[in-house]
Length: 269
Image 1 (cartoon, rainbow, N blue to C red):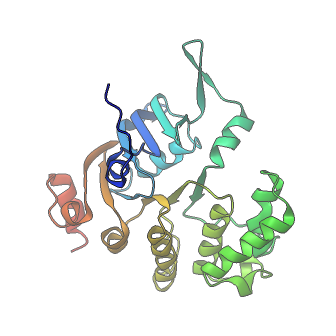
Image 2: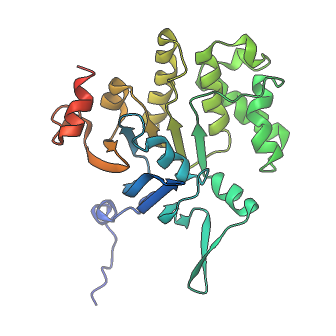
């Protein structure tokens, strides 16, 4: 075996980077309804993947399976090299304990359709609740980080406000900050603008674009075609529990190959 005496920058650049997310043959059913029918997907570190598709195609279910809010029936999902929800012991898969799953979820932030902020807590209290109460971070460090994040999204002046005093767009930006406060390696967004009035959508999408430009790994389920075109590295189209088509935004959105993708996108033209 010939081992090079010097490692060059070109060799480092050529070295493969392991995917942050690996999903293989993922199946999920609710009673007799099969929602996911064998999903395969890799997501690289720093990649922004936007998942499009009609209602009922399995997009949100797949997202919830990634952080084990839904347990899959078959297949596997790995995040940062760890199989989510299970461990291999004596050649058999065992379900992880609740504490072990909570530890895995620290790597994964999630933003939902609804804001799910605690109404009796201020913005700052909402944000530091998980870092302090679940992950054992000091209140001082969690507060400093929360204020930095709020400043990034233009809401530092709202730290002492209660959710009822915020607009829907502001509440969703706080929800994004709350997810970021645990310092995740992966962010999941499940239709984050669907509950907002149209005039408030732009401020949330702007925050998400900023996160994408900073190299955060993101999987986004949305119907916002403009966001997919501008911010995504890859667009995935799902239908009927399958990934039907995927590729660069300019290809999937501009030159879709599958009839189902073409029919779906024709509604937005």
